[in-house]
Length: 201
Image (tube, rainbow, N blue to C red; front, side, top):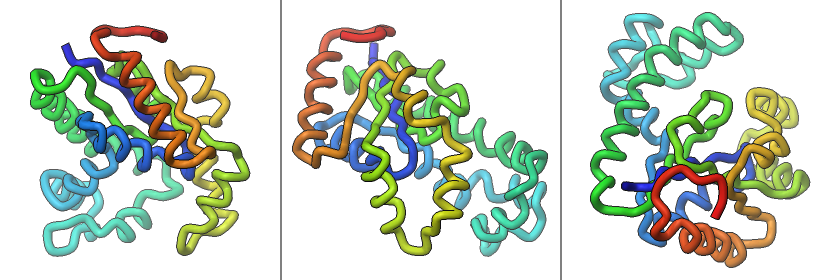
C-alpha cells in the first residue's frame, strides 16, 4: 500500500522547492495548484462560465476576471470551491490509483491542506517551514508583492506555528538547499517499508 504524505506550508516557506526535492528523489507528487490550472483550461471552464458568466475566454478561465467576480464575496467563493474542489479530488484519486503499484510513497502537495481538511486523506503530514524573516524576504522579492498583499494572503492561511504543531514531519528550509534535501532523505528513509497511518517513525 502506498503511504500518502501530505505536503503543505505557508507562502514563502519553500513548499514548491521541497516538492521538487521529492520528485528528484523519484517520489510521485500531485500538485493541487497545477491541477487547478489544468482544470481551468479544461473540464472546469464550462462549469465556471455557467456560474460566473464572462470569466472564460477562448475556452479557458481568465483568472483575473474570475478573481474580480469572487474575491471579497464569501458566498461566491463557496460556489467556486463547490465546482473546483470535487474535480481536484477526482484528479488526486486518479493520481493515487496510477502510482499505487509503482511507489511506496506518494506526496499530495496541497497549499491549504489543514484549512480544507485535506489531512484526513493523508497517512501523515509534512509541513515546510522557515523563520519569519526568511519567509518575508522571499515573499517580498516576488514581482508585484506588497505588504498589503502579503498580509492578506497570510490572513487566509493557518498560522505557521499551528501547522507545525499538527505536523508529523517538518522540513526547515531556512538553512539552505543541502539541508532541506537531507531532511527529505531522512523522512523517506523513515517511511521506507512502513505503510499505513503513523504519527512518527
